Image (cartoon, rainbow, N blue to C red; front, side, top):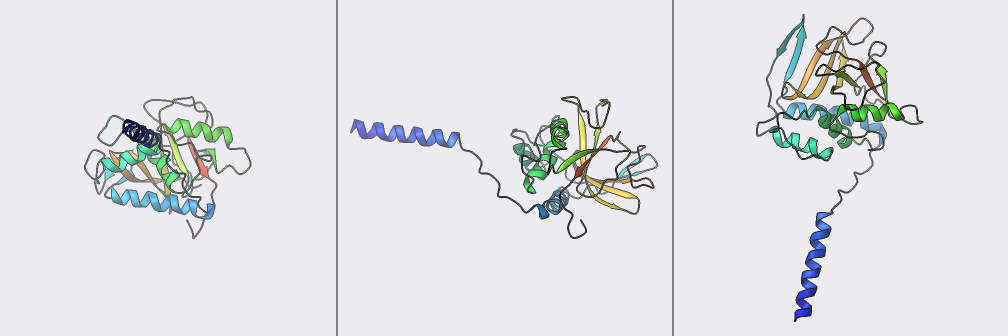
Amino acid sequence: MIRRIFRRVLWGSLVLGLAGCAVVPPRPAVDPQLVRGNILKLAAAEWNAFGGQTIYHDGGRERIDPVGVWEDERRGSPRIAAYWRAVGEDWSGKDCDKPWSAAFISWLMLESGVAEGEFSPSGLHADYLRAIARHQDEPGARFALRDVTAFSPRPGDLICAPRAGARIAAFDTIPDGTPMHCDLVVAVADGTLESIGGNVRNSVSKTLRKLDAAGRLDLANDRPWVLVVENRYPSQGGL
């Protein structure tokens, strides 16, 4: 009898131990032809889920119309918690002092089929940007850093700027821990760039910005843009 009880206790402990060490199964491989489109569609879906908040910049003025769901609201916070889980952290939109824009970009990439070997998910933009810089010259690298003054962004690329007063000496030399923000470019047309970013005015927001005659970001815009992350995944269906 004692032996049977011991076996049950031992088996129960083993099961609990295995559950505590559970490993998230790897995501299924995605056809590279679909990845860029997946990123854009998923970003649009999240923007809509947050109420379609849209920011316009005109003549140095900012206008928000409509105002969407904010990070600490009941509809927003659980979604932000999912972004944080993608980078292995346990936060939510209710932690309003925790910038979550990098977690949002990381979640987009992973959920869209970008392999972790091609993009290093992190709660800090500087981490994945530094990883891209290290590997961008390798054969088959899917991302590369580009000078914002010399490269015209297109849908699927990221546009990035330092924040909180930080500065970087060169677009491809980013000190460890530099506070930054990146948006995903979702449309470029008629001299206007549309991008979607997380933690922008407390929501997942779409922002419209003017481009110059060469199709590059106007550096007089709202942020000190310094680089574009070129997305080398194939374009498909006009995306």
